[in-house]
Image (cartoon, rainbow, N blue to C red; front, side):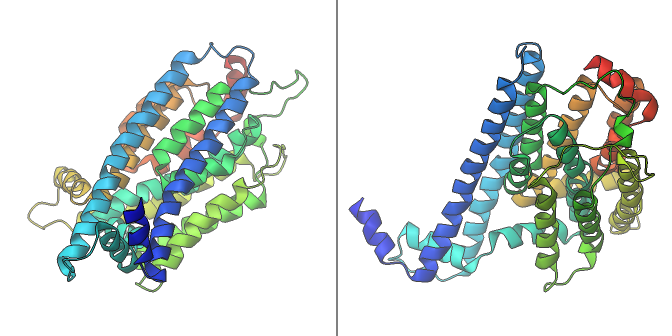
Length: 372
């Protein structure tokens, strides 16, 4: 202990600040997990038959653990790679302690920015990362708001922040657990409104639309504008979830069904442009779909940061498909939905297929209420 205190005493204020920020990151993660687990516990305490969905909840706990272990295996690999890469380029004093070396690394390295540069700069790298951005900004933010309000889930904002600092797949699986643990309020027989008629407040649709714009402009950012653009996207998604209002229905044309459709339609040209750019980066001698898939697989394992976010995409997609298969829907029949998700998601991305599937249809909403 005295040795540790002595090592800390030898650090400069800048080094101490860097270590404090790094430590605070992990403390934030622990605190967010505590908020989310409290949210799940609160939802479960209000349910009269907690054992009814025990098998489904256990499945999503398994997906949570699997996605966390897989994505963070690569996250720790990235941190180790970054530390080794820094020391390989720097003159290390033989007398430096490990604490001093780590502090120097943190002072001279922006881990967040370095990681996002890695996963965004290459055309095929961005083809991976954009999938998670579109899903998070579009379908998942709206899903958190609507279902969080409907099921009266506590601390919905914590799921979003946890997804941003840990992994979207981990946070989404935990949110699925919260929904399964809660009781969905039943409508009265006189209530003829449907999920399709749910009103979308400006505090939800405005941040979502602006965030989608940041995704569209990301490939055109410079070293000066890249990080601000990224931070705007992350910050805006938290805003509507800080204060979730009770759901209201509207007779206006702009309702939940239209909003999901709008997200889907806006995402199509964004995703198409990215995939065309990725295909255009291949050698002219072999620009086939198979060659693109092989290059995507190669890029997925080209760097630990890329592997972490790439597998987060895979886990998020898998978990959403499982959720769609196991829960009632106000969308299309599962005979269409599940094959569509399985076949279309690998090509179009979960950022496109999720809003299409989540979009409620008037004719199907009543059936979903009965199944609940």
